[in-house]
Amino acid sequence: MIEVEHLTKRYGRHLAVDDVSFTCEPGTVTGFLGPNGAGKSTTMRMICGLATPTSGTATVSGVEYRRLGNPGRQIGVLLDASAQHAGRTGRETLALAAVTMGLDTARVPERLRQVGLEGAAARRRVRAYSLGMRQRLGLAYAMIGDPAVLILDEPANGLDPEGIHWMRGLLRGFADRGGTVLLSSHLLREVEVVADRLVMIGGGRVLMQGDKAQLLGAAGTLVRAADPVALDALLDRMGVTGSRCADGGVLVPAGPQSIGQAAAESGVVLLELRAAGSGGLEEMFLRLTAKSELEEVSR
Ligand SMILES: Nc1ncnc2c1ncn2[C@@H]1O[C@H](COP(=O)(O)OP(=O)(O)OP(=O)(O)O)[C@@H](O)[C@H]1O
Ligand SMILES: [Mg+2]
Image (cartoon, rainbow, N blue to C red):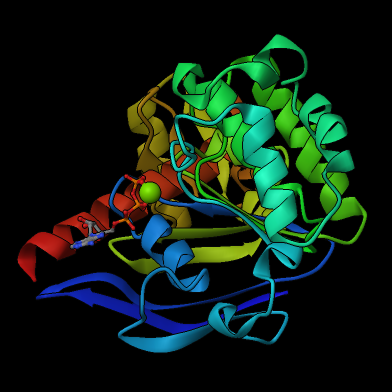
């Protein structure tokens, strides 16, 4: 369980994280989404005791990270894939982590295998690792102490499509066994498949959060008409305000049923009518973040 309450971080005059609150429950993966500079890493660093909050609190299993004894046994953290000592081999990195946590190093080969770094890769120095290999080692490092909670900052960064697929399976399995996962990304599509909940931030603030299925359901309807002007007039009469998507369709905050019905009654020919799903969520997110950037400028 991760509990973040009114977490705020100020760097000089800049509010990097502004009153952020959310909870990550056992058995779930929470996707932590936001564009570059949104405050994802800063929030995660505060949860892990690497940055001191200006105000607010963050606890893991009810305790502040700094107060946890042997934290690696309780929380696995991957904040920076390049944080490992470049001069050590992958195997040495994990062995040292195990020893530090008071664990048997016998588990190391299995863990290396689990992340696809067995054989020659395990004997190479980290300096010679690709970014994807570093991420894999970072995941093994985070999981070596069998923690109940994982906090991963952009772990998919540098992974190839097969690697991303593999990582999703790993995290899903971890959560299904009762683990808690907080996973950040700047791409909705990257976390959408594996996340149960989504927390979206922009400009340091939470813009939207909730159950993934609910958010997808609330993302509205995508409508495209043969005559866009007639569609605009129809939506106007219905009293709903649609917004034009990049692909020319209109995202409407109403259900497909009511729009389809009204279009049929008015003789407006529709070429497309479907629940917006992740496309709608992405549009919504882009709009929300664009708005928060505008506010940022005017502040
Ligand atoms: N040590 C620091 N000193 C000053 N400002 C900082 C510091 N760390 C972060 N910031 C600022 O805080 C804001 C949030 O940064 P953060 O790294 O948390 O964003 P992010 O969401 O992780 O972005 P990205 O997707 O690029 O990783 C940015 O404006 C950044 O410049
Ligand atoms: Mg970051």
